[in-house]
Structure formats: C-alpha cells, structure tokens
Image (tube, rainbow over the protein chains, first blue to last red):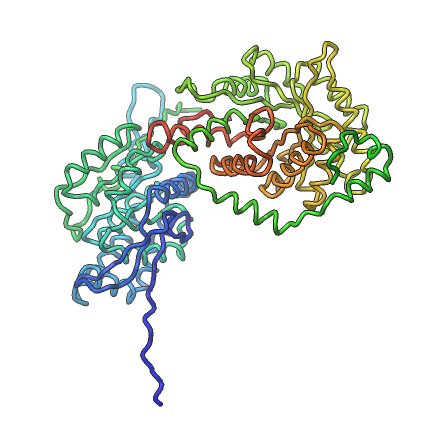
Length: 293
Length: 320
C-alpha cells in the first residue's frame, strides 16, 4: 500500500509582542486572518484592553532607558532593524503579497520603500536636534538652547491598508526621537506587523520600546486614548472614521495627550514624509545657562 | 496537633519538650501547598467585589519605609499619605499603620495625631536580629516609649535554624514584656520570621507555632530585606497555623505578609487565600496586614480605574 504523503498544513496562531516577549492575548481570543482573496492564512491574537494596559506598562518601563540612549545609538539600532527586514525579504514579500493582494514586483517595491523608510528615519536620529533645535539669542549673558525631547509613551494606531510601509512610516518616526510605542496593527492585514515584531525581537531594540498588538483599533483605541499614562496618540489607523476619531480625541484630552489627528483618507505612503511625523511627538525643552561660568 | 489543650506551659517548659512538640507538628506537603496557593490565585474577583477588595486591601496596608536614608521629612510625608492615600477622593479609606524605624516613631506619631492610623516600629536590631538580648529589649522599650502602637520584632534565625527553639521562644516572651505600657494599652507585637532564610515550609509551620505560643499578636513573613520575601505558599502555611491555633486555644493571631507584594492583583490573591484558608474572620485590618510601600500606589491606581473607567498612571500619585 502506498504511503499517504499529503503533508498536513502547519496552521499558525501568532501572538502579541509586549515588553520584548510574545505573550498570547490575556483574553485568550484570536481571530482568523485571510489573504486578499479571502483564503485562510493564519490566526492572529486579538488584543484586549488588558493587553493594551500591559503594553503601556512595558512601554513606560522602557521609556527612560530608550530616551537616555544617545541619538547616534538609536540610529544604529534603527538601521539594524532595516538590515534585518532586508534579511527576511522572502518572508516579508509573502506577507505583503498575501495581505495586500499585490503582485510580486509591486510587493517588492513596497518592501524596498519600507526598508528605505527605516534607513531614512535612522539617519534623522542625530540630526533632528540640529534642524528643529536652536541656540536662541536672548537679552542677557546666557546661552539659551532649545532642544527636542521625547514626549514619552506614544500609542500608534497603524494604517489599515498599508500593512508594512504604512506601519514602518508611523512607528519609526515615533521611536527614533526616543519615545516608546504601543502599536495597534492593521486589523485585516496584521501579518507583516507580526513579522516586523519578530524582527524587533531579534534586533537590538530593547524590550518594551515597540510593542505590537494585533487587533481592532476601534476596540483597543479608546482604552489607549483615555489611558492617563499614555502621553500621545497617533490616530492614522482610523482614517476616515470621523465619529470614532472625535471620541478618541475627546478621551485623549483628559490628560492633554498630544494627538496626531486621523486623516480623511489613508495618505500616499510612497511620498517622502515631512519632519512633522517626528516633531508631532517631541517636546521642546529650553535651557538657560549663564555665560562665563 | 492538640485539639483541647489551651495552655502550652508543659510544652514550652524545656528545650526538649518544645523540640518534641514542634517536630511533632505534621509536615507540610510543599508541592501541595504550592498547588493550593496557585489554584486560589486563579479566582476571578471583578466589579463590586473587586472594589470592595481594593478598599479592604488599602485598609490593611502597613505603609512602610525602612531605608537608611529615611528622614523626618520623608516619614512625615508618608504619614500624611497614610491618613489620606488619595487626596482627590475623600471616600478612599486610610491605611492601617505606618511602619518605620524606632527613631522616627515620635515624628510619625505627631503627624498622625488622633487619626486612628497606628504607628508600627521595627525593633530588636532589625533586620538581622544580631544583637545581645538587652540591646534588643532596649530598642523595643525605646520605640514603645516614643509611642509605637505596634512593634515588629525579628527572631534570631541563627538560633532557630540550629535548633535552639527555647532561646527563640524566650526572646519573644521577653520582647512582648518590653511592649508593655504602665497604664495597660500595650503595644501589639508582630513577630517577623524572615521565611526567606528558613529554607522549608516545615520550618515555617514550626516557627509559627513557636511564636504564637510565646504570645505574638501577629506573625509576619519577612523584613523585606531578604529575597524571597512574602510568597503565597508561605502565607498559606502561616494562615493554616493561625487557624489551627485558634481551634486549639481559642486565641486569634494575625498574619502579615511583607515584601514583594507589588500589584493589586497579588493583594487580591492574598485576600482570597485569607478567606479560604483562615476564614472570613481574618478579613479585617485587625487580623491581616500587608507590609508594603509600592503596593499602595498600585491599589490606588486600580481604585481610580474602577471609579473613572480609564486607566490611571503613576504620575498622578505621590512618590514615596
């Protein structure tokens, strides 16, 4: 009798990325992720409000150390992330193709752009201060210096359509200046974010600096927006949903969070970003120092 | 285990009889104790029950600062916090006590006034307990005279581990006498075992009985200076001991886990265990305490989350 050689599929259930570890959702829920044609690909963890809470705790714990690193070091680490994404090219290509229904060539272009975007932001790490900081002339014998400082813990609702390039374009500008991030990935297309989390875990990014939650921005977003220990929120992921965006902005006002407002529609991620992607999440600190002392 | 005897003077009369009694206590099944503690930790306490548990836990906190760098200003601030842990919410209860070194007792007493919050002082050469008996007693009397309502003493772990049970016993008795005040109203005595140094749960059960027979009002796990400090299995064994002691003698003894309890969730796990092992009679600040410093802020954050419906952050509570 001939042996049955049909191989059984390995059906993966991916997990969250919190504090440098890969926990399951506290809720125990996961959800089905289909490819662009509606075919089953994998299961992803469905993040709950408690996962968001844990992620904020991890991000807060990592904030001091990350902000305290030199800008040069943060640049190196971000560049290393770009290298590792490059190393995992086939895996990312497949994830992008499945998620966004692109041809291999188009997915390759998206991946190139995403890697270039990481390198671009890595380059800004030790240059932003020179561009947006200033030595202010003042009427007295003082050096008066304004420099950008990280805002703290930033919640990022990542874009729903562009699952890799969009994700990189909202996460990199937040962490490059020394913030830590809690990212809620695209709901329908979470797999590139999951693979990106695996890259982060094996790069030199300290645990907790970037936390990736797969799940619904509409469910988790309100908890992050109202969380008193989150300093800023990027609402890009709910582009077009004016009612939800208004609710989240109101909730965010309670502790005067910085808010990057939801655009009417998802932006064209292939364009070179502006500096506002970084300066939206920094605080300008001005120091007076007596001259000649 | 004795079921009728109420007087242990025949047991505590000599080293040999004491040893015979303590070693005659049933052994603790360590795997069983750990499994039981873990199982009780999975109980889900939500909504109104959680709100009640959080308030009870706040009322049970012995707000502690035992650092070499303590100043009068710092303990004064801590005492103010003890009376009103959440200044933004007048419904938030006060904690049970403020726990400090003896030289800070007068300052704390003055700040607390007639608020009902007790002053606890660690004494007897805390945390090591390595000093001569008369120095330990002088340390205790000093704190009592300064106005301490509660004395947290440490046992001589070296003597206990080398089997000199009677010496440990007599020391506890002597310290309890030093807690006396002329007009009655003696300071309550908490006996710290430093379970992290006692090696086995069998030892924890023995030392619990030893301290209770010597007249401890409270038995306490640790100083907070040694790891591991309070753990659920150790507290389980101590809760069983106070339960059995009440059954045997009719006397109730309190339990205080201290050190390493940092989250509101942990605190609630302990409360579940108190209820299930010792019984609801112990669910009272008079009979169960948490020795903690950072725990209070966690409890307050959870409490705020329950009342406001949004997560709070450490920025909104005082650092101490």
